[in-house]
Length: 472
Image 1 (cartoon, one colour):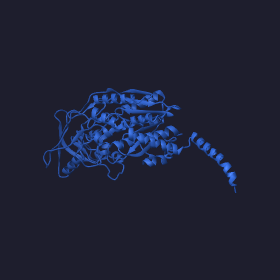
Image 2 (image 1 turned 60 degrees about the vertical axis):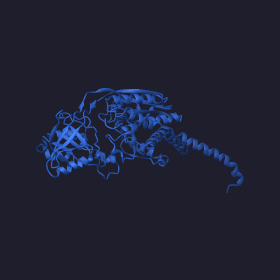
Image 3 (image 1 turned 30 degrees about the vertical axis):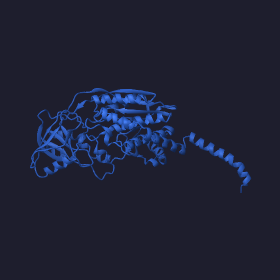
Image 4 (image 1 turned 90 degrees about the vertical axis):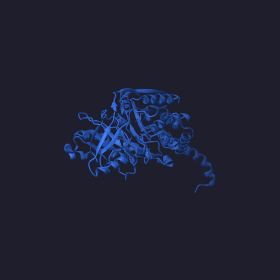
């Protein structure tokens, strides 16, 4: 038994030893949990009371508008975001050149049921991005409904030559993550036109990539395959897809299509980049970004104006908190994710040429909804250990309802995977995203200010932890 007097003598020494041990643990990479919790709280307080993402998004959507690559609006978006980053007192802000496709929609699309037992019915339609047009006169042909690419081979040229192929596979409503449902249906849009053209089809209709039933058509990119004729392609609303399918059950249907979209050739554009240089490990880059371009309908608010202004606001929050990072924190606004990925490819090529080391790349391209967490991807070597290191921070992130789990990163940052970067996708709630994705409904008014700001805070919190402790 320790005598009370002796214990009183020992207590000051024990206190010194505990303090020394705690500081030593922190300096060797152990977490100073209380300090980290306080700082993450300060990040959220700043983002929610003095963030800039919402007014920046208002300007980007209402003053600039839809920003398809190659358009005057895309050029205006480059100038606006460059100027905003340049006001933050960053160490560097610059434009990175890239050549982008310039596709234009032309006149309003006409897709009409021209011959059926119901007579003439106008359908809500949008040409798919990169599609060729029908020509001034349009085209008319009988429709053949299929549920997927596999049906084409079964039907063959005997059933498809000279026809309009109608892809009508809906989202799988049982998928709780609507991005999984999107992934299970989007091959119809991306590959359907070329696959149908192999069998002599003259055009394609695609059920919109949407999780609900409404009258809003969704555009989106297609990819033509070399050596196969390019045929026109349009998306129709989910309600109209149901209508057309029901009419086809009763007998033959002929549809008239007229689109005047066309590709005008490549144009020069830019990625917009700003960074704060690291004080201890400046050659280790933590990237956060989104894509600056959007489709030419709506205002590109959720896709992906939200991701761009959140990424910009991460740097703004750190500057306002006088945070000096150990590693370089870089914001990249990529051009041409929607119909070419030229900006992401140009960025990765330049990073490889300069020998840059990206420790982590984070992409926000799933809308400005309430945060749920992060999904992580990377090359197999060391990936599991890095993921576990991030998951060890869960007690600090759980108060903000944020998880860290294995999953996808993002399209723009995907070329960095081969260069050893850990890829992280910021994951907000997905239930409403495909009500707005690639539509005229994707406007500023459907973005909630607080949810947008919470996304800034979520990404800044994770970046703070990665910057402070690394992932080794």
